[in-house]
Amino acid sequence: MAKARYLFLLLPFVAYLYPPLYDRMEPRIFGFPFFYAYQLIWVALTSLLLAAVIWMERSRR
Image (cartoon, rainbow, N blue to C red; front, side, top):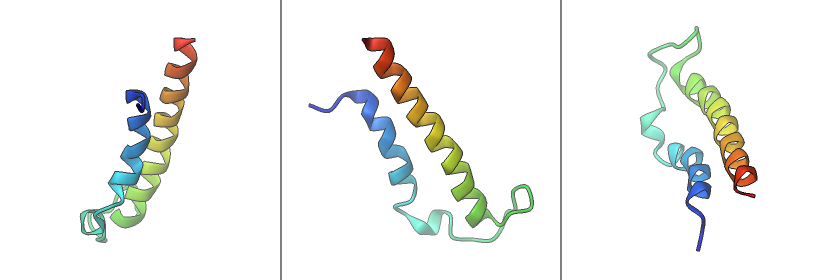
């Protein structure tokens, strides 16, 4: 059975499953069209989620 902490790693995948959610130009975030800002934000969030899962796995041992 998959460990619950690994389900966090599915969040970035699920965030990209429905393109109409982020396929637009407005609003602009830090000068970037929303389409690009959404992707950049998820790059950072994915790194944080991965770090959290690694930290939880190491603290378990």
